[in-house]
Amino acid sequence: MKKVVTIGTAGHIDHGKTSLVKRLTGVDTDRLKEEKERGMTIEPGFAHFFLDDCLISIVDVPGHEKFIKNMVAGAHGIDGVLFVIAADEGVMPQTEEHLTVCQMLGIEKGIVVLTKVDTVDEEWLELVEEDVRDFLKETFLENAPFVKVSSKTGAGFDVLKDELKKLVESLDVRKGRSFPRLPVDRVFTVKGFGTVVTGTLSDGELSKGDTVEILPSKIETKIKNLQTAGKDVDKAFPGQRTAANLTVPKEKVHRGDILTVPGTLRSSRIVDVTFTLSKSAPAVKKRQKVHFHYLTLMAEAEIVLVDRDILNPGETCFAQVIFDRDIYPVYGDNFVVRTISPGRVIGGGTILHPLETRRYRKKFADKFIEKLNALYKGKESAFMEFVGEFEPLEIKLLPQLLNLSLDEAKTLVEKFKKEGKVIVADGLIYTVETFKLLVNRALELVADYHEEYPVADGINRETLKSLLNVGDELFLNIISSAGLEENGKVIKLEDFSPHLDEKFSKLKEDIDAELEKSGLSVPTLSTLKEKLNVPSDEFYMLLSFLKREGYRTAGDFLLLPEMFKEIKEKTVNLLKEKGEITVGDFKNLFNLSRKHAIPFLELLDAEGVTVRDSNGKRKLHK
Image (tube, rainbow, N blue to C red; front, top):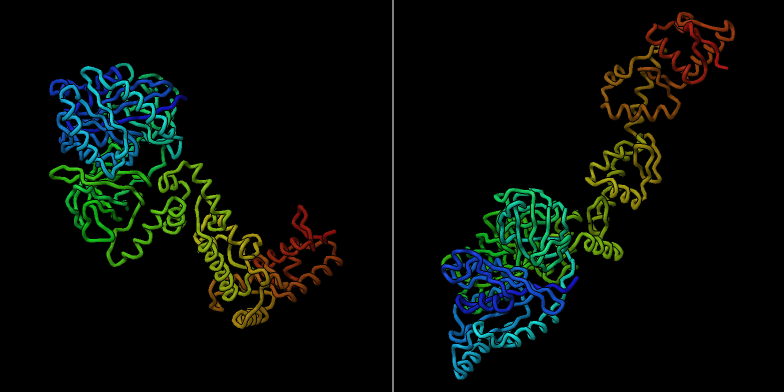
């Protein structure tokens, strides 16, 4: 792929931006009838041309103050700027606003173009250049090349192209970092094709046939066709002006929408940011209503200063922004802020926390600022902060929280795993400290269970998992790290053996007494439980323990070990004498009712003492 860059124009109305682009590319970016009638750009216009082996996309933005919001939308995603100032007028109000927009959007390189040089003399041109250089001091354009041109005569355009080559060479090629996002700046229909949206592809790659999600509507649609630089392509790359033909009606997509991978972004109404106030803007008080420009979206919002009550011109601080609607922010993205009335650009900044849920409160200022400082330090510091805040943190949230591709996010997670700082299980991330707490909690729960129910083998596996509120994978890690033993469906401490404590010893004595008193005509289990007035869970836990100690259950009856021994010995002796017996013979032998005799015989069958033939008679098991 050839090198691809997007260059934007910026500058005051009627300073010759559109004429400059037309002379440079041969394309008239004033495409609307109203624009041609009024002689000024209203919507961003686009043109493409090759300079050597580089494809340059030009975004021509409007300069009039009424259309500054359109300028901000168009300026998103540009790699460098042609900062246009007319030689006959010099620095004007929108010149200053456009410079602020460029700085707040993080644009770092550009060329200063003095246009209409054919309309002024040399002495005036020198004065204007001096004034412009003074205006650009302490900005990213302070040391930018100055090029003087006339779109009317063509003077200076060879020099401009040479400087553009140098600019392009100095720009880094955007790699497919993060996930694909196409902020929509235009929506229209093409006869025979349907809905087409355009924008500058922010990150990642889009391919023909991809399924994408339109936000905020959350509609999923397929990309039928892709174009870059007016040509059909199978794939679009970061930084390219991209047109996508979608399988949805035009009215379902709007400027400000985002096309992205389904399920990648969550909505938010609160973000934490760094906020820089322009040097020429009035001071901002603790709370101020603003127009918030993000990607191609404009939303009304309230800015809440975090570490001060007043932000003075030229200063930067932490702030929280509260919106009147859902937006889909991403860590590290830039934004621009304008006052509501009059609509003036006053500053901008960078998103630190895209999915904030807590409103800033002054009484928690120190802790809040500590969190934002951690997010400000970079992605690795932010990663640990987010893990601690969201714990457990879903891995699928990391692309939005850290502006990474999912693969990059997983690589970062692996790094912290190897360093022993996090544990990952079930697609969730935990700090090692939290994992240790869970291990200790598991040990406590099992130990408490053993203390309360010492006759039981251990706590039910699913009960323990539910009490810990963890997934399967993490649960296995906890069991292993805690040194707990899993036996079938129960979990126990490694050195634990079921035993009788004082409470259960007393209950066993009561059960034994009731059984001895009844003879072989023992009561049912439910009758025995009710008679002893014991909780069901304790009764059946003890029952399981007693069965391991030689007690037997025959149907719904419990037998003492000596009772079963008596039944077995007498039955065997009778069978040796008669060869076979009926149920009636068994009843008479022990003077039992049928409801006792049948379960007792079935127990003897199960124990391998007797075997039942087809006639219902019992014989000794061979």
